[in-house]
Structure formats: C-alpha cells, structure tokens
Length: 408
Image (cartoon, rainbow, N blue to C red):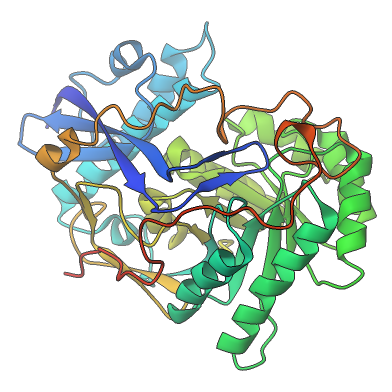
C-alpha cells in the first residue's frame, strides 16, 4: 500500500449560540473545522482533522510511503520541518496527516482504531465543556441540563474576567449537576485560557475556593511559564491543568521538571502519535492525561490504550456539518463503535455549502489575545468596561436537540 495524494476541505460546527472564552466570542456560534483526506493506491482514504498550513512541504515526507508505518512517518514529518520549526499550526498539519494515517492503518487491518491500539474498553469517560462565557444565566443552565441528561457529572466552564461572576456561574452549573446526580458532588473546572498573571491566578482561585471545590484550574498563566504555573499550583488547592497548546515533547519537559502541571492535556488537533508520546511521558511522572477538542475522535480511540487517561472533553453534542461519527454519548462517556479506523464518514458535497465560514481571521474571537490580557487587576468585560451580570444573546437552535451521531 502506498500514499498517493491528499485533499483538503473545510466544514463548520454550528453551535446555534455564542461560543468563546476570556479572549473573545464567536457570536454566531459558527466554528471552522479544517479536514485533510489522505488517499492510497488501494482505495483506502484516511481522515484527519486539523490545519492545512504548509501542507505541501509536510506531505512530501510521506508521499509514496506505506501509510502503515505511521510512527516512523510521524518522525519523518517532524524532520521535514526541522529548519522552520514545527510549532503552531504546522504542528497541527502534521497532526492531521498523522491521524489520517492511523485511520488508514486501522481500516487496512479491518479494526476500529481503539482495538488496533490495544484498547480493551470502548467507553471513554467525558466531562462537559460548553465554551459558554457568552451565555446568559438561563442559557448556561439550559446548556448544562442537556449535558446532564447524557450522564455528564463533571463540567468545565469558561471564565477569568470577574471573580463574582465566575462564582455565580460555577454555582449554577454545580447545582444542575448535583440535582442530576441525586446529590452527588460533581466535578467543577474553570478554564481562563492564559488570561491571568501569577498573582491574579492565585488571588482569583483562592477567592473562589472559599465557597467552591474546584477540580482544576486550566491554563491560569501563559502556556510556557513553568515557574508561574508551579507558583499557581502551590498557591491554590485545585489542580493545574495545561498542555493543550504545547507542540512537542520538548515543550512539556520544563513544565514536568518544575512540577508545574497536575493534569496533562493534549489537543485533538495535534494528532494521535503526539498524544501517545505525551501520555507515556506523563505516566512516567505519575500524572493523568486529558484530551481536549470539539471533535477529539482520534484521541478518544487512543485514550482507550493508555493507563493514565482521566477524562476527555465533550464540547458540542453535534458533529460538524457533513460529518458522521461511529460513536455516541451515554452515561457520562463517549462510546466508540466497531467501524474500521476512526469511524468517521465524510460527505464532501454537504460540506461545500459550509466552505468559507466563518472568517476566523477576524480581529475578534477566542483565537485573538486581547491587548490587556495578563495585565488586568479588576473585573472587565468588552472594551475594558466593568463586567455585566447578564449578556443577552439570541439562540438559534434549542439546546435539547437530539445529537446527530451515527450508531452502527
């Protein structure tokens, strides 16, 4: 079997409500999902989710190769980008191609990827994550009631701009999950997406911990600040979670050496091989791993094969337009199917209408760091004005819509 070529396309996830974090919000809830399709001479096509940046140069490392040698091909792609470096979006391109190769390898073997990787249990524990900073109180409660109906008993909300607002929103979500769990204590996490200084982080979390039990605080300071993350970890009771934006084992090493991370995260977009290596490194330090991402299919399969997986992030309950997945959510977990490979089916015709949306290069949004991020001392909202207790936003799709997934 030989790799003969690739194709790229882009679709979107339509949340039907605002989604975002402390850095910004997509008001229309439309989020871009780039896709790479890798073809072979035996008619098997692999699917990878991730950027297309510099893909011609990266693909040159694997063109004509046997895709079943995926681990060695991953290293070839890293070497291909040696001079310019593989950080950032280029690492995402490598991850997308890597995931597609794993998909091909498992399809060729006639097995779901979770089985090929040595997994025993198709059930992958999950936590709810609504990208919810733009929601009103009623919308927040409604969203997490839907998650609760699928058995989710742990949740991560977005925050970091206002202590009292974060306390109020965490309490609302706690109460929803407590009621759904018949009084059992839920897991609560807060993600601030690198919005704070070290002192802000300790001050903010310690104040929340006077009345709330936080499982973890996510990305409290910059991703590379090993000393700062360690200082936050010493100053609060909650665990420190980080790693989703680190691109390569060399970036994890200083954090682990400094005792700066308690929950090791990896992003779905960085690929399966990266996750497996990070999981092994974390396991050597007796640390758990937790994948993140809106459609973390590849890492869900990989999570079944590592000994230190804690829980995977469940964002939207609906797959991107033109994509169906052989998995479903039940009793607080992703349940993986038996389709060979990743179990992703792509309808390229359905995706054509989604091309070009949204404009992720716009000046505002979760991907753009605000000018004052990491330098604020007081509660803020848009344009530096005091945070408002309620932000009215329209809803275009009911939160209780049935997930559009495929169970085979």
